[in-house]
Length: 253
Length: 382
Image: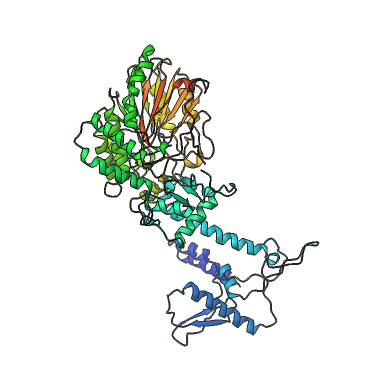
């Protein structure tokens, strides 16, 4: 008898015995059998043990108390360490990336997120088959569809972050409730393709970021952002993304 | 940037403030003369691009005379003014939009002769809060002529119109004025997008307040109000000129920004039997006009900020206004007047701040652009 059928039988028994308690048996019957749980060894140095999905390889993160989160840098380091350990114990095995749209590959991609996996450097990138009659592969030729998907994802996230800030007075550092989208829905009328150009009101040649900063200082009543401020970079990304396909026309008035 | 570069606008405003500070005691006529003189002085210093500074108050001193001279053949039965889309936050948070609203009130109070009434075109508040609406009520309380109120989505979706209705009464109503039947609609109902998403009232309001926030529904007059409109018009002869006020345009311009009323065709069908129908709408914050069959449409200007023209769907009859100068808070904004003519048609005067006023004649619309075309912009949208 499987675990599930035991549960069902138990539920049936409950229903017969405690017929008055209408909901309890149904709840029991809906429960799926528990998934196998890896036994994580105890921490030896007062930290937290993190285990790989093989249920065997593990490392202890020193100083990380139960319930605490790792920093991104820590997490990257831990995943790298786990993969190094796994490869040491499996010298003959090779990871191969699952390529989008190619179901014939038998070796699955590692389950970790793309950023962490790439940073860990533990993956042997699947070599892209070279089409006949093309030049021999170089750096660019070796990228896979998955690479492009990862990059697109990262770029789209950056643009989405810019969109969020663009629509949020507080994120912009505004003090009077005004955000960019109030005058520029969907980033309209920002014409990033026309910069650099002589901005007569500023009496100098302006870049898009100069105008973003001008808007933040004046209508938005916030403080101008440093050119390297991630928020300014994200805003630029969103505004440019909104004009994809529009021909560049720097200097246009 | 401010520390290193002071914009021309800022320099100009500082110069202007310095000159004008001592002049507050002057009567209006003298004040205008001085203002015109300071403008000349500032322009002589080449501080302002020449296209961007035309004092509307000075320009306004003349048009009443020209309008009445031109209209002698059929003296206008009446003129009304409008103020629209003030988008007020609480006074402590934002003075910028308060300045715009107060400026518009000054404008309409300065009209001579005074308009029969002043239509407020909706979006009095930015986030529908009681304090915002109350501030708007105080500012509009300074208007000398009677004020007719219309509701906008920014007034409505925080408390679904409770505070607004408590202050201003029902959102849709009608009245007769000098032989014209006037209908005020509440055209910004939205189908429930908030309950399933478990939104708080403020989240709902913020969603609707975002022009490019696609989560919200499209505006509609709705079944109940269309029935009300049909019943209201049941006893109005088809020869009576109709004047309809709606916050959203009663046609389909650009769906993504709700420059749109979803049941526009059904409303237009109700208005179709009438010889002359003029729809005056807010929401779009730009010079905008259209003609569909017997119906002439005019959009109103905002006092808070101008919207860009939408990327598609602009009515072919609309002649775009020059691009607004972001360095001038008042450019592209304003208020306006409508002259209801003896023939039942309506001419619209866009009183643009810091620019010459633009008159759009009904003849232009009903001739489908064959005559009386308004002047073309020098700088259209990008």
